[in-house]
Image: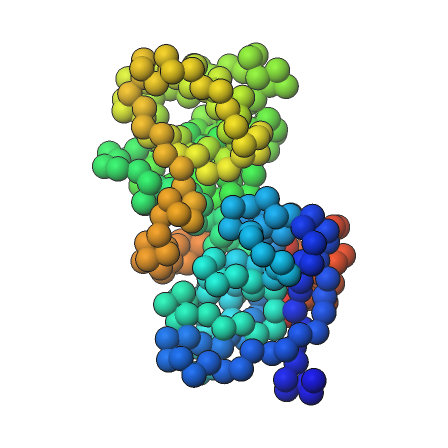
Length: 310
């Protein structure tokens, strides 16, 4: 293949093995007016990207698999956009073709690398609050299970941007919790039964990135008289929990999940402009940037939030 016909991309050929950097055919400019060719400028390794690459995520079904679910790039007309490949698959390439409907103009002043790093973890909490919760009161209160994770930390800012007055964080690292500007903190103990949940107080929403036994203990301890909306987002402590039926009968709680399928791509497209603007106001969370050619090294050794620049 000539240089004009080829490009660099990343492939997963067998589930649970590291990705490889390789040369593949470059996609042609689409003739379908509803699609556009994107020159990828930045794309991130998110938790969901690793889950898909291992074959464990429910959207990962075929091999070879091109990792990546979103990024920042330029269209053939030169427009700088955020793009999602959640329904088309794969962003770890120099060029990709995506539906125009799955692109959103990057607001002026928002750093492309920062957006590539943060949109995915930010949308987990934003979409949960905007599409999976119903009739939240003004100045609602929210409890974030897993507040020191990347997505959990960003969820603090997203919740406040959407009107939360009181934010409670739950995690194991007490020192990290104290740095997050939370209104209250609950430190998970090594023996979860020994965790003191008294500071939770009255909450309207639980955003859960932990799940498993800690969530069971939270439900057991909740004494809030308010209607509670619980949204399951992640499973840092496992993918299953054993919740007694008596908990559901004794508390005014609504349980939902949030992720692709729980909300629609149409809903995501509607929310993306506001998510991008909110991300522009987030301070810190500087990503570690690698060239795509170093994907095999960064996949194993990269720390924190990793972004590739093809």
